[in-house]
Image 1 (tube, rainbow, N blue to C red):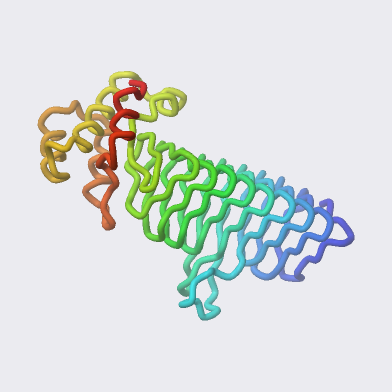
Image 2: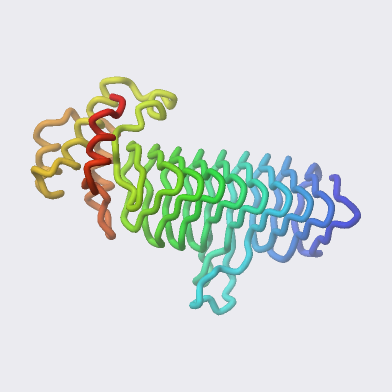
Length: 271
């Protein structure tokens, strides 16, 4: 174990033998730090479990009180998965509501100044670019990418393997597998590159793309679009997940074109 002499460590913290903790880092109450973790200078961690091999960069803050006026000091926390990288000045707040947890999956990258609010859940291999921000109770699916300075309303969902451009904002759910951008963030095509990189075959990509086009078509409302998908699109695990995502949306999903700019983007999008 390598702990700088200026670090402040709570007596109750549970720290694996090979952990590295830098200058002026503060490890507070309710902390478990697993093997191979590296914590940079000035980082602050409390009420959190940090998974094996995760790196915490200087000045990151994990487990601080939620920015929730309903929080009354109840015991909650944060769970960070394995092999994540939490960059400089990123913040991950603990949950509100007795016993609840804010959760970050494995192999996530949260770049500088990004923010994960209380009670959020991130799947594995999620990436937040610099300054990406999600409100409380947001759920982010596996492999999603949130562009820099993008902002998402509390209680929204971001579907797996979606990619959202920087400076976008959303108050409704973002469907899986799409490219989205704007205010509000609208799907402008398939995240074909991301899907290929994750081994999704062309036949499956084509089926997903067809389903997304039907969902966005002005010819149908959402219920009608789902019926058309059921009748005309070859089913695979991804199409099934997409349909289930839309069916279970509580806030609604962003689908329609806002103006001619987005229509032009779709006409010129890949695949």
